[in-house]
Amino acid sequence: MHLKAGFDEVEAAASAFCHTEIGAWFKRKISETTPPELVGISVLYSGQVIAALTLTHLVKAQWPKVPVVWGGAHVTALGEEISRDTRYGSCVDGFVFGYAEKTWVELLDSVANGSSWPQEVIRAGEEFRRAKDYPEIVPCFGTPVACGGRLTLPAQSSRGCAFGRCAFCTYPAIEGTARNLDLYPVREVVMEAERRGAVVSFKDSLITLNRLDELSKLIDGRVQWSGCTKLHPGLNADLLRRLAAAGCRTLEVGLETLTESGQELILKRQTPKLFLEFLDAAAAAGVSIVVNYITGFPRVDHDEEQRWLTKVLAEISTRPNLVAKVEHNRFQFERLSPMGRQPERFGLVVTGSWPWASVLDWKLAA
Image (cartoon, rainbow, N blue to C red; front, side):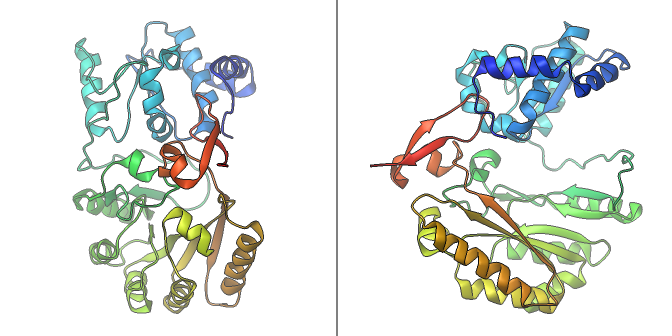
């Protein structure tokens, strides 16, 4: 869902959503809640915008003087548009862009003290400012809601992407400069997971090999864990065995495409040989893998894409000891990606954009 609709259409959808079963659930929860001093809503992708607007409308109906502030990855992706257009703020009082641990605390303090909000909390139409983060903070996990499966606790050992050159990707724009974080919060999350019998899922965009090695030494098999990395010759059977012994159960990699023209387009070269060696190493080490694969790239032959995707699936199936899943996605033309910011460089023309959508429509340049 990419919300290819204008402001009025999205607002109308949110108003209608107020009268649905979910809207009724929102109303009931709001009516059962003590009036707060502030409501914060995190919007992670475009599919949550209508629900977030619905909740905002219902909050305003119940508590007209309570401010509502939005943040999250999707809000950050639209930050430049929000800073230029007051219509985004028709019912939202403030927006926060990027990681915001410190800004959020400052906002709560200002609300409690009746003082001015931090300058990093902007109103629609105001100058774009990235929030202040504080990655050293240790997450506080409440009592989990029973939903089946094993409890998973999130952790992060780095922010940004150490590769940071993929032409289709928005991670550098959303997360900022790549940097490793202090491992103290990770150590605390691992201890909490150990106490709860939980697993740890690292939310880093890309964990480098050196950091994987550091994490394996820190965790040392006390809990099971997973993370995302990039294909590399050093990601061999010896390293994967050490990671497995340290509790690593799953690694996710962005293969994206094995077509030569596709790799040239997205500025990410990875050979079939390197991929096959990684499959062998993962099978030998007993580490499960998730392979991200994309088709539908501009100027890339569709049949060639399908042939390579079929080969990827076939190679996985020939390794009975390998537990693997291919996440197949279609190319999305994101406005904050290098392709979206400089479409002419990639032989593309933008043909459509919508206020609440982070993706653009496109066609090939003549």
